[in-house]
Length: 123
Image (tube, rainbow, N blue to C red):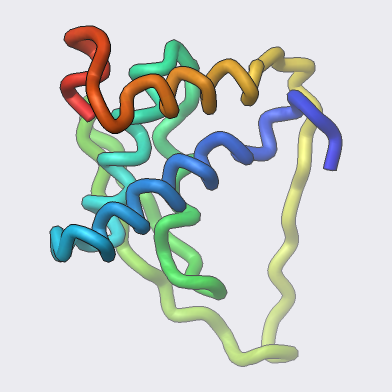
């Protein structure tokens, strides 16, 4: 995968961390709850990620319809057609964006286990 091309690797790591914390601390978060925690964590690092990146919180093979209302996003899993029944087309675009995933991950790591500033306390 090309580096710094907006393929949501940092969002995937944030979802992984949120999911791990959910499991180890029995938080009983829904997929949407995991998305919210992952988004908040990534935004605290200074990343200008969008809300769609965290859709990886849903189980593999799940397509999700996302509805946005200000800062709130609601997700509805979609019933997918049987394999071979219909085609699904994916589009990848290079927007020439710049992100520094190592810096984002360093900032996330700095927030645990003890928050070092007010922004990290939110996590």
